[in-house]
Length: 191
Image 1 (cartoon, one colour):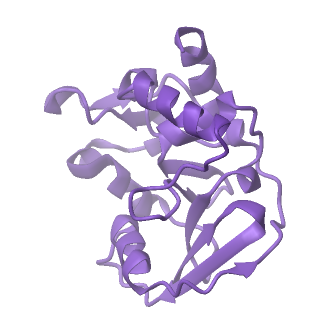
Image 2 (spheres, helix red, strand yellow; image 1 turned 30 degrees about the horizontal axis):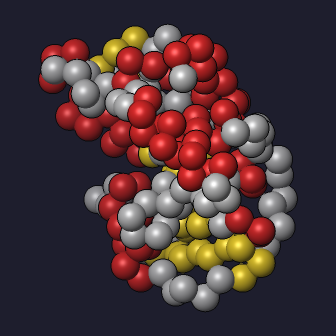
């Protein structure tokens, strides 16, 4: 079984378990969650405090598409709004590795906006966690989906990031920033 959990402000939470088929990627699991999730929200206190800056990013700073988008999100946060996808689900999506490291696979702009606004821990921002129920983490094979058609070129995913804005042959890049904290430090002076 794969378990998808959505965390909202003030400790609101919902989850869904779906059969885990090796042919269903993490991205496809998120879409199943969006279609099948019960809007019944419960309150749940976060059991662990995960520093946002310690989370592993999948983009270097040159893979951050739009600083204007981050600035717009900052304005929304200042006005008291949280950032969600257009479908109302959390934009920040993560998985946990076999080494108990967290990977941000969607929502880099959103995460950076929250950090700029002083948020420090994962439970302070709306987010989704996708995990395999039996082990609470995903394996390296499942992580490869984040690199799309470049996955077969990778021996160690931790050494690479993806830049979807680059030309196809330049999309797979050597990792420069090792976590969201380093990514934040590399762009904060230009925001």
